[in-house]
Image (cartoon, rainbow, N blue to C red; front, side):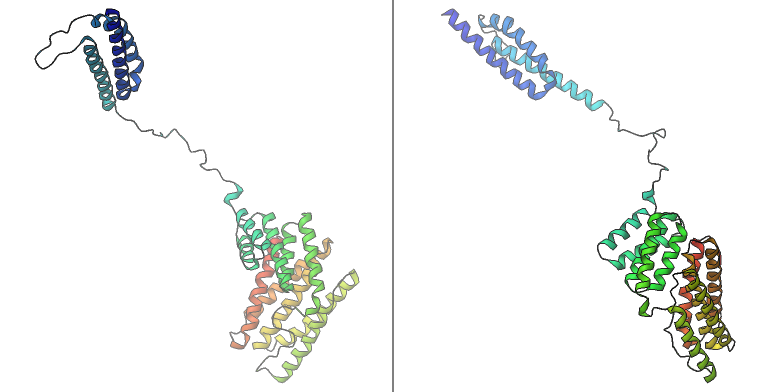
Length: 355
Protein backbone atom coordinates (compact mmCIF):
# COMPACT_ATOMS: atom_id res chain seq x y z
CA UNK A 1 0.00 0.00 0.00
CA UNK A 2 2.78 2.36 0.88
CA UNK A 3 4.58 1.58 -2.30
CA UNK A 4 1.48 2.21 -4.34
CA UNK A 5 0.85 5.52 -2.65
CA UNK A 6 4.44 6.56 -3.25
CA UNK A 7 4.16 5.64 -6.85
CA UNK A 8 0.96 7.67 -7.27
CA UNK A 9 2.52 10.57 -5.47
CA UNK A 10 5.60 10.43 -7.75
CA UNK A 11 3.38 10.46 -10.82
CA UNK A 12 1.45 13.42 -9.49
CA UNK A 13 4.68 15.25 -8.77
CA UNK A 14 5.92 14.62 -12.26
CA UNK A 15 2.66 15.93 -13.70
CA UNK A 16 3.02 19.07 -11.61
CA UNK A 17 6.61 19.41 -12.79
CA UNK A 18 5.41 19.22 -16.37
CA UNK A 19 2.88 21.94 -15.63
CA UNK A 20 5.64 24.07 -14.13
CA UNK A 21 7.86 23.49 -17.15
CA UNK A 22 5.07 24.39 -19.56
CA UNK A 23 4.28 27.55 -17.62
CA UNK A 24 7.90 28.68 -17.49
CA UNK A 25 8.39 27.99 -21.15
CA UNK A 26 5.47 30.28 -21.81
CA UNK A 27 6.84 33.04 -19.57
CA UNK A 28 10.42 32.94 -20.76
CA UNK A 29 11.51 30.30 -23.30
CA UNK A 30 15.15 31.15 -22.87
CA UNK A 31 15.15 29.62 -19.35
CA UNK A 32 13.58 26.31 -20.28
CA UNK A 33 16.78 24.35 -19.75
CA UNK A 34 17.27 25.91 -16.30
CA UNK A 35 13.73 24.97 -15.31
CA UNK A 36 14.12 21.43 -16.58
CA UNK A 37 17.23 21.00 -14.47
CA UNK A 38 15.26 22.21 -11.43
CA UNK A 39 12.48 19.75 -12.28
CA UNK A 40 14.93 16.84 -12.28
CA UNK A 41 16.25 17.77 -8.85
CA UNK A 42 12.73 18.19 -7.55
CA UNK A 43 11.58 14.81 -8.87
CA UNK A 44 14.49 12.85 -7.57
CA UNK A 45 15.04 14.49 -4.22
CA UNK A 46 12.38 16.84 -3.02
CA UNK A 47 9.42 15.05 -4.60
CA UNK A 48 10.14 11.68 -3.02
CA UNK A 49 10.92 13.20 0.35
CA UNK A 50 7.76 15.25 0.42
CA UNK A 51 5.62 12.32 -0.70
CA UNK A 52 6.12 10.51 2.65
CA UNK A 53 5.93 13.54 4.90
CA UNK A 54 2.80 14.85 6.59
CA UNK A 55 1.29 18.18 5.62
CA UNK A 56 3.10 21.09 7.21
CA UNK A 57 1.49 24.05 8.80
CA UNK A 58 1.66 27.26 6.92
CA UNK A 59 0.85 30.77 7.90
CA UNK A 60 -2.86 31.58 8.12
CA UNK A 61 -4.51 31.54 4.75
CA UNK A 62 -3.71 28.07 3.43
CA UNK A 63 -1.46 25.07 3.36
CA UNK A 64 0.63 23.34 0.76
CA UNK A 65 1.97 19.85 0.28
CA UNK A 66 5.60 19.21 -0.44
CA UNK A 67 5.05 18.99 -4.16
CA UNK A 68 2.89 22.08 -4.00
CA UNK A 69 5.66 23.95 -2.24
CA UNK A 70 7.98 22.94 -4.98
CA UNK A 71 5.48 24.23 -7.54
CA UNK A 72 5.25 27.59 -5.79
CA UNK A 73 9.01 27.80 -5.49
CA UNK A 74 9.57 27.05 -9.18
CA UNK A 75 6.91 29.50 -10.35
CA UNK A 76 8.40 32.23 -8.20
CA UNK A 77 11.87 31.47 -9.52
CA UNK A 78 10.66 31.41 -13.11
CA UNK A 79 8.70 34.65 -12.78
CA UNK A 80 11.54 36.38 -11.01
CA UNK A 81 14.03 35.41 -13.69
CA UNK A 82 11.73 36.45 -16.51
CA UNK A 83 10.91 39.76 -14.88
CA UNK A 84 14.53 40.50 -14.23
CA UNK A 85 15.37 39.80 -17.88
CA UNK A 86 12.51 41.99 -19.06
CA UNK A 87 13.67 44.78 -16.79
CA UNK A 88 17.21 44.53 -18.11
CA UNK A 89 15.96 44.62 -21.69
CA UNK A 90 13.78 47.67 -21.01
CA UNK A 91 16.67 49.51 -19.38
CA UNK A 92 19.12 48.81 -22.21
CA UNK A 93 19.25 51.64 -24.76
CA UNK A 94 18.10 50.78 -28.27
CA UNK A 95 20.62 51.85 -30.85
CA UNK A 96 19.58 52.28 -34.47
CA UNK A 97 22.17 51.51 -37.14
CA UNK A 98 23.85 54.59 -38.44
CA UNK A 99 26.19 55.25 -41.32
CA UNK A 100 29.01 57.53 -40.51
CA UNK A 101 30.74 59.79 -42.98
CA UNK A 102 33.31 57.09 -43.53
CA UNK A 103 30.69 54.88 -45.25
CA UNK A 104 30.73 55.82 -48.94
CA UNK A 105 27.97 55.26 -51.48
CA UNK A 106 29.55 52.94 -54.10
CA UNK A 107 27.42 54.55 -56.87
CA UNK A 108 28.61 58.09 -56.18
CA UNK A 109 30.24 59.81 -59.16
CA UNK A 110 29.91 56.69 -61.31
CA UNK A 111 28.30 57.05 -64.71
CA UNK A 112 27.64 54.64 -67.53
CA UNK A 113 26.39 54.99 -71.07
CA UNK A 114 22.90 54.39 -69.68
CA UNK A 115 23.12 57.88 -68.15
CA UNK A 116 23.49 59.39 -71.61
CA UNK A 117 21.45 59.21 -74.82
CA UNK A 118 21.82 55.48 -75.48
CA UNK A 119 18.41 54.72 -73.88
CA UNK A 120 16.78 57.41 -76.04
CA UNK A 121 18.31 55.84 -79.14
CA UNK A 122 17.07 52.43 -78.03
CA UNK A 123 13.54 53.78 -77.57
CA UNK A 124 13.67 55.24 -81.08
CA UNK A 125 14.70 51.86 -82.53
CA UNK A 126 11.86 50.11 -80.69
CA UNK A 127 9.36 52.69 -81.93
CA UNK A 128 10.58 52.30 -85.52
CA UNK A 129 10.38 48.50 -85.36
CA UNK A 130 6.87 48.68 -83.93
CA UNK A 131 5.74 50.90 -86.82
CA UNK A 132 5.41 54.11 -84.81
CA UNK A 133 7.33 56.31 -87.26
CA UNK A 134 6.21 59.53 -85.59
CA UNK A 135 7.62 58.59 -82.17
CA UNK A 136 10.75 57.16 -83.77
CA UNK A 137 11.35 60.35 -85.74
CA UNK A 138 10.92 62.48 -82.61
CA UNK A 139 13.36 60.33 -80.61
CA UNK A 140 16.00 60.24 -83.36
CA UNK A 141 15.75 64.02 -83.77
CA UNK A 142 16.25 64.44 -80.02
CA UNK A 143 19.41 62.32 -80.12
CA UNK A 144 20.80 64.29 -83.08
CA UNK A 145 20.04 67.62 -81.40
CA UNK A 146 22.01 66.75 -78.25
CA UNK A 147 25.35 68.59 -78.08
CA UNK A 148 27.27 65.73 -76.44
CA UNK A 149 25.96 62.73 -78.38
CA UNK A 150 28.76 60.30 -79.38
CA UNK A 151 29.48 60.26 -83.11
CA UNK A 152 28.54 56.57 -83.64
CA UNK A 153 25.11 57.07 -82.06
CA UNK A 154 24.57 60.34 -83.93
CA UNK A 155 25.51 58.66 -87.23
CA UNK A 156 23.07 55.84 -86.67
CA UNK A 157 20.33 58.24 -85.65
CA UNK A 158 20.87 60.23 -88.85
CA UNK A 159 20.81 57.05 -90.94
CA UNK A 160 17.58 55.81 -89.36
CA UNK A 161 16.00 59.22 -89.87
CA UNK A 162 17.10 59.14 -93.50
CA UNK A 163 15.41 55.78 -93.96
CA UNK A 164 12.20 57.15 -92.45
CA UNK A 165 12.32 60.21 -94.71
CA UNK A 166 13.01 58.09 -97.80
CA UNK A 167 9.96 55.97 -97.02
CA UNK A 168 7.94 59.18 -96.72
CA UNK A 169 9.14 60.27 -100.21
CA UNK A 170 11.22 63.12 -98.76
CA UNK A 171 14.33 62.26 -100.72
CA UNK A 172 16.10 65.62 -100.37
CA UNK A 173 15.86 65.45 -96.60
CA UNK A 174 16.91 61.79 -96.69
CA UNK A 175 20.05 62.68 -98.68
CA UNK A 176 20.92 65.43 -96.21
CA UNK A 177 20.72 62.94 -93.37
CA UNK A 178 22.76 60.18 -95.01
CA UNK A 179 25.41 62.76 -95.89
CA UNK A 180 25.53 63.71 -92.24
CA UNK A 181 25.74 60.06 -91.18
CA UNK A 182 28.59 59.39 -93.62
CA UNK A 183 30.49 62.43 -92.35
CA UNK A 184 30.07 61.38 -88.71
CA UNK A 185 31.26 57.79 -89.23
CA UNK A 186 33.21 57.59 -92.53
CA UNK A 187 34.86 54.26 -91.73
CA UNK A 188 31.85 52.43 -90.30
CA UNK A 189 30.80 49.56 -92.63
CA UNK A 190 27.24 49.54 -91.31
CA UNK A 191 26.86 53.27 -92.02
CA UNK A 192 28.41 52.91 -95.47
CA UNK A 193 26.02 50.10 -96.35
CA UNK A 194 23.03 52.01 -94.99
CA UNK A 195 23.97 55.15 -96.93
CA UNK A 196 24.23 53.16 -100.15
CA UNK A 197 20.80 51.67 -99.57
CA UNK A 198 19.17 55.05 -98.96
CA UNK A 199 20.86 56.45 -102.08
CA UNK A 200 19.46 53.56 -104.10
CA UNK A 201 16.00 54.23 -102.72
CA UNK A 202 16.25 57.92 -103.58
CA UNK A 203 17.42 57.19 -107.13
CA UNK A 204 14.51 54.77 -107.58
CA UNK A 205 12.10 57.49 -106.46
CA UNK A 206 13.76 60.28 -108.46
CA UNK A 207 10.93 60.31 -110.98
CA UNK A 208 8.53 61.70 -108.38
CA UNK A 209 9.81 65.24 -108.97
CA UNK A 210 10.99 65.71 -105.38
CA UNK A 211 12.87 69.02 -105.25
CA UNK A 212 13.85 71.41 -102.49
CA UNK A 213 11.51 74.28 -101.77
CA UNK A 214 8.52 75.34 -103.87
CA UNK A 215 7.85 73.10 -106.88
CA UNK A 216 9.51 74.03 -110.19
CA UNK A 217 7.50 76.48 -112.22
CA UNK A 218 6.23 78.45 -109.21
CA UNK A 219 5.36 81.99 -110.30
CA UNK A 220 6.50 85.19 -108.63
CA UNK A 221 3.48 87.46 -108.07
CA UNK A 222 4.02 91.18 -108.53
CA UNK A 223 7.37 91.04 -110.36
CA UNK A 224 8.09 92.60 -113.74
CA UNK A 225 6.96 90.49 -116.72
CA UNK A 226 10.50 90.18 -118.11
CA UNK A 227 11.77 89.02 -114.73
CA UNK A 228 8.91 86.53 -114.49
CA UNK A 229 9.79 85.12 -117.92
CA UNK A 230 13.48 84.83 -117.02
CA UNK A 231 12.54 83.05 -113.83
CA UNK A 232 10.43 80.55 -115.77
CA UNK A 233 13.41 79.81 -118.06
CA UNK A 234 15.67 79.28 -115.04
CA UNK A 235 13.10 76.92 -113.52
CA UNK A 236 13.23 74.73 -116.61
CA UNK A 237 17.03 74.62 -116.31
CA UNK A 238 16.61 73.57 -112.68
CA UNK A 239 14.43 70.63 -113.74
CA UNK A 240 17.03 69.51 -116.31
CA UNK A 241 19.83 69.62 -113.72
CA UNK A 242 17.74 67.59 -111.32
CA UNK A 243 17.16 64.95 -113.98
CA UNK A 244 20.90 64.27 -114.30
CA UNK A 245 21.86 61.30 -112.12
CA UNK A 246 25.66 60.86 -112.50
CA UNK A 247 26.96 57.32 -112.51
CA UNK A 248 30.31 57.99 -114.14
CA UNK A 249 32.94 60.71 -113.79
CA UNK A 250 31.97 62.36 -117.08
CA UNK A 251 28.37 62.60 -115.93
CA UNK A 252 29.54 64.27 -112.72
CA UNK A 253 31.30 66.95 -114.74
CA UNK A 254 28.22 67.35 -116.92
CA UNK A 255 26.07 67.95 -113.88
CA UNK A 256 28.55 70.51 -112.55
CA UNK A 257 28.39 72.40 -115.85
CA UNK A 258 24.59 72.28 -115.95
CA UNK A 259 24.43 73.48 -112.37
CA UNK A 260 26.66 76.48 -113.06
CA UNK A 261 24.60 77.38 -116.12
CA UNK A 262 21.39 77.41 -114.08
CA UNK A 263 23.06 79.34 -111.26
CA UNK A 264 24.09 82.06 -113.74
CA UNK A 265 20.47 82.46 -114.85
CA UNK A 266 19.26 82.83 -111.27
CA UNK A 267 22.01 85.30 -110.40
CA UNK A 268 20.82 87.60 -113.16
CA UNK A 269 17.30 87.41 -111.73
CA UNK A 270 18.47 88.10 -108.15
CA UNK A 271 19.82 91.48 -109.23
CA UNK A 272 16.25 92.79 -109.54
CA UNK A 273 15.76 92.54 -105.80
CA UNK A 274 12.56 91.96 -103.87
CA UNK A 275 10.78 88.64 -104.25
CA UNK A 276 12.86 87.79 -107.33
CA UNK A 277 16.06 88.06 -105.29
CA UNK A 278 14.70 85.92 -102.43
CA UNK A 279 13.49 83.15 -104.75
CA UNK A 280 16.55 83.21 -107.02
CA UNK A 281 19.06 83.05 -104.14
CA UNK A 282 17.15 80.16 -102.66
CA UNK A 283 17.26 78.26 -105.97
CA UNK A 284 21.01 78.87 -106.23
CA UNK A 285 21.47 77.43 -102.78
CA UNK A 286 19.38 74.36 -103.63
CA UNK A 287 21.39 73.71 -106.82
CA UNK A 288 24.73 73.83 -104.99
CA UNK A 289 23.29 71.82 -102.12
CA UNK A 290 22.19 68.91 -104.33
CA UNK A 291 25.43 68.97 -106.30
CA UNK A 292 27.44 68.86 -103.08
CA UNK A 293 25.56 65.83 -101.80
CA UNK A 294 26.13 63.98 -105.05
CA UNK A 295 29.89 64.57 -104.82
CA UNK A 296 30.17 64.02 -101.09
CA UNK A 297 29.45 60.31 -101.44
CA UNK A 298 32.32 59.85 -103.87
CA UNK A 299 35.40 58.28 -102.27
CA UNK A 300 37.78 60.51 -104.22
CA UNK A 301 39.43 63.10 -101.96
CA UNK A 302 39.36 65.78 -104.67
CA UNK A 303 35.62 65.40 -105.22
CA UNK A 304 34.96 65.40 -101.49
CA UNK A 305 36.78 68.73 -101.15
CA UNK A 306 34.74 70.22 -104.00
CA UNK A 307 31.58 68.90 -102.42
CA UNK A 308 32.26 70.75 -99.18
CA UNK A 309 33.03 73.92 -101.14
CA UNK A 310 29.70 73.64 -102.98
CA UNK A 311 27.91 73.06 -99.68
CA UNK A 312 29.42 76.24 -98.25
CA UNK A 313 28.24 78.12 -101.36
CA UNK A 314 24.77 76.69 -100.79
CA UNK A 315 24.76 77.94 -97.19
CA UNK A 316 25.86 81.40 -98.34
CA UNK A 317 23.05 81.55 -100.89
CA UNK A 318 20.47 80.48 -98.30
CA UNK A 319 21.65 83.25 -96.01
CA UNK A 320 21.39 85.75 -98.88
CA UNK A 321 17.80 84.65 -99.45
CA UNK A 322 16.97 85.13 -95.78
CA UNK A 323 18.58 88.58 -95.81
CA UNK A 324 16.08 89.80 -98.40
CA UNK A 325 13.12 92.06 -97.60
CA UNK A 326 10.36 90.78 -95.31
CA UNK A 327 7.55 90.16 -97.77
CA UNK A 328 4.37 88.17 -97.14
CA UNK A 329 4.54 86.56 -100.60
CA UNK A 330 8.09 85.38 -99.86
CA UNK A 331 7.18 83.42 -96.74
CA UNK A 332 7.32 80.03 -98.48
CA UNK A 333 10.77 80.78 -99.92
CA UNK A 334 12.10 81.99 -96.59
CA UNK A 335 10.83 78.90 -94.80
CA UNK A 336 12.57 76.68 -97.35
CA UNK A 337 15.79 78.69 -96.98
CA UNK A 338 15.74 78.35 -93.17
CA UNK A 339 15.19 74.58 -93.37
CA UNK A 340 17.86 73.87 -95.97
CA UNK A 341 20.39 76.20 -94.38
CA UNK A 342 20.03 74.23 -91.16
CA UNK A 343 20.47 70.95 -93.04
CA UNK A 344 23.55 72.20 -94.89
CA UNK A 345 25.15 73.45 -91.70
CA UNK A 346 24.50 70.11 -89.99
CA UNK A 347 26.34 68.25 -92.75
CA UNK A 348 29.23 70.72 -92.68
CA UNK A 349 29.52 70.43 -88.90
CA UNK A 350 29.49 66.63 -89.09
CA UNK A 351 32.25 66.76 -91.72
CA UNK A 352 34.31 69.08 -89.51
CA UNK A 353 34.01 72.02 -91.92
CA UNK A 354 32.54 75.34 -90.82
CA UNK A 355 30.39 77.42 -93.14
